[in-house]
Image (cartoon, rainbow, N blue to C red; front, side, top):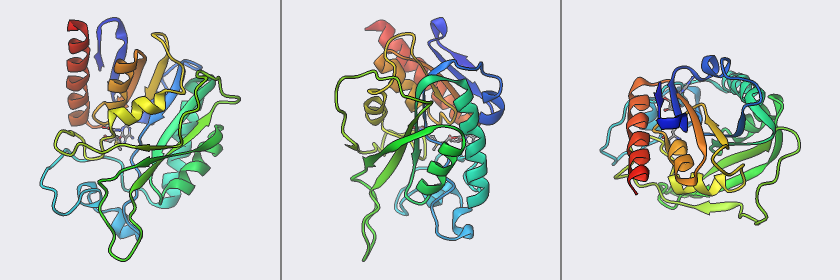
Length: 249
Ligand SMILES: C[S@@+](CC[C@H](N)C(=O)[O-])C[C@H]1O[C@@H](n2cnc3c(N)ncnc32)[C@H](O)[C@@H]1O
């Protein structure tokens, strides 16, 4: 487990569902997460290909640690997502917001699972990725989606009217995770969530810790879970570096 001073950021290495079951009820203000999609192909065989092949362009040279848990079939993916989303619902406060990344293939499964777990489905935010690979003779699949919901009636935290579409590029040269999300996008998403130094954000699939960095940058507390020891180490180093830079400035 990695923890910053005053425990503003905590990153636990472990299996999401197992760890979630140990967290207290009604403790977190926001769930913002990017689970394995178990996607990337039309057929079952295609989905079970190594994520590094599924989610990277063929001309990409970089290699990353293995991304775990990305090979469930459709029925088991929905069932599994319902299990961890139910635990997220339990550990969330009444009125908490949830935001879950998905792609076009898993959008229906994920909205089913979110609602089956007890969350009120509120909409879908679009992340436009201009750098996505083109499809010969077909529409470019240059968007991923963020399913939004709340635990009962949502608590309102802003008097602005945020957009439903965000455009952010992935910095392929700097990213340390195969499917890393831009920190600026995560900060945009946090705009509708509980603000301030007591607001606690949960990400049970923390990867390289991007949600944690967004929380540090926006002055929120963060608790993350990551199964892979390599990604847990990368995320811990990244969060420590950001926390140290902030302390020095
Ligand atoms: C899509 S990635 C998250 C990437 C992250 N948003 C970032 O920007 O780096 C999903 C992560 O969940 C982790 N994972 C897969 N199954 C898990 C499980 N059962 N419990 C916890 N983490 C898991 C994978 O190792 C992977 O790092």
